[in-house]
Length: 153
Image (tube, rainbow, N blue to C red; front, side, top):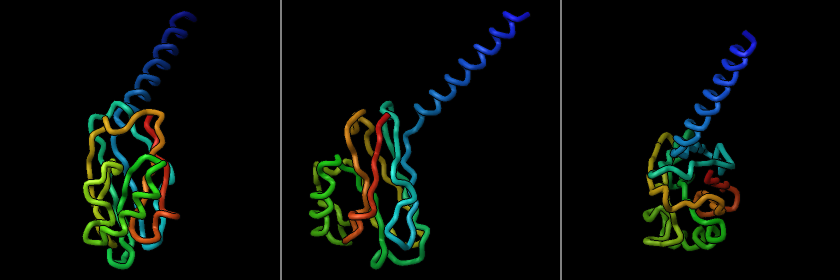
């Protein structure tokens, strides 16, 4: 009887660990919210290294238009983020403040204003486990405070 109870507990633990691993393997989405301030709702996000495709979901829950408090998400290697943010200013609002055809940019969304949502997808193979990645808003003046770390697990 005691052996049967122990066996059931071990099987339950294995089922729990398997389910946790399966949930982690499905982490192929980056969900961020912003508002009428220069702040993402998260400072760290993570995705699985097994993702074939990763989708960024950005929701602007504020009311201000893109021209005055627009936000986007740009993903680069951490060492490139500042230069990409600086170069993005030349692209302007019409270019979503992202340098066109810039190989340093892994992914980006369009600039959105209050009440809007946007989605963008990119190949998971562009991210390597253990590498340092930064996500940020490239609107003028935003990247200095509106940035976070992307972890690949």
